[in-house]
Picture 1 (cartoon, rainbow, N blue to C red):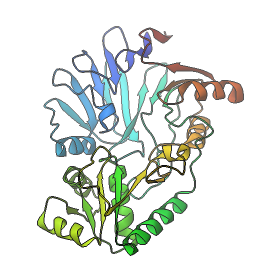
Picture 2 (cartoon, helix red, strand yellow; picture 1 turned 135 degrees about the horizontal axis):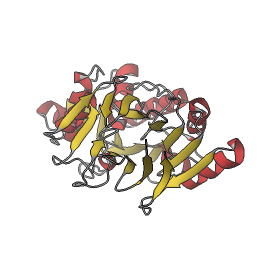
Picture 3 (cartoon, rainbow, N blue to C red; picture 1 turned 90 degrees about the horizontal axis):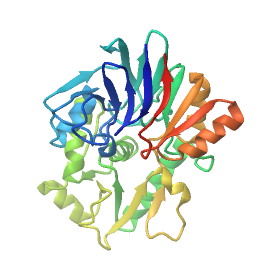
Amino acid sequence: MELDIGWSDGVTISTKECAIRFDPSKKGVKSFNFISHAHGDHTMGLSNGNEIFLTAETRDILDSGGRKNLNCNALKYDRPVEIDKLKITPFNAGHILGSAQFKIETPDLTIVYTGDINCRDMLTTSAAKAVSCDTLILETTYGNPSYIFPRQEEVYTEIIDWILSKIHEEKIPTFKVYSTGKAQEIMRLVNKFTTIPVVAHHTISKISEAYNKNGVALKYIDSNSEEGKKILREKQCVYITPSSEDALIDEDYSKAIATGWAMRYKSSVSYTAFPLSNHADFNQLLNYVEQAKPKRVYTVHGFRDDFGKYLKKNLGINAKPITHLSQVNLGRYI
């Protein structure tokens, strides 16, 4: 089977008969489109004109945000679909609810596309497991040795301590985070280890409904409700709001963010930054490669050049970056 791997408005695997795109970057490109998870930078290619494949949980999250798609095929982990003699199987990616990595099997070759992955257990997701393959297409957001995250338990403890200290100061501990994934992780942390009410911005409340529907128990109060407004006035709660939301943030609110990029932030920033990430750090990415045992690796996004060079130098693996500027095929298999 003749098979090309490259970038064409998304990571693309094509045969003579069809093209399969993973997390396509624009609408209207004719192909079978596989969506790894519900974050906006991975769902730009959603279009009714193409056949869309995603997990049922990802569909629920998109539906909660009003992004209903009429031509979606809901996938289940570990259950393959077949397209033009290619068998494609989704596996848990550990990133957010419903996130998937995909194994693509041909008669001659096995390829894995990870999308964003996280290889350690969190409160709202379970760790991704490495999938053995000949060729690995690896998302390398934190693929640099300077991004090795601290122990999860340490970060959780720091967050809870900060919340309690701010409430003691009669401030509202406020987290400005991604509406999908990080918001629910903070929410679950507060639910699990405190009795403090959580007030969630309406956008986050809607998405959290999809988490509850799929078995991730979350307790929260919508900020638009009368109860939510009352609790905020009393300053005895945790408030969770989208990263882009600036309304309601005044001197009564102590702001924090939670992101892996906190590893590079200076202490002089005007908010508290916790290195809590639902991405794989450098060591997790390296462990994934060692366990998957690919013959070649294509790196995508983030520190793709750094990680590819590290694999070549230290593991002797043939590694190349896939860039958005490249429209040429990077590999051909017969």
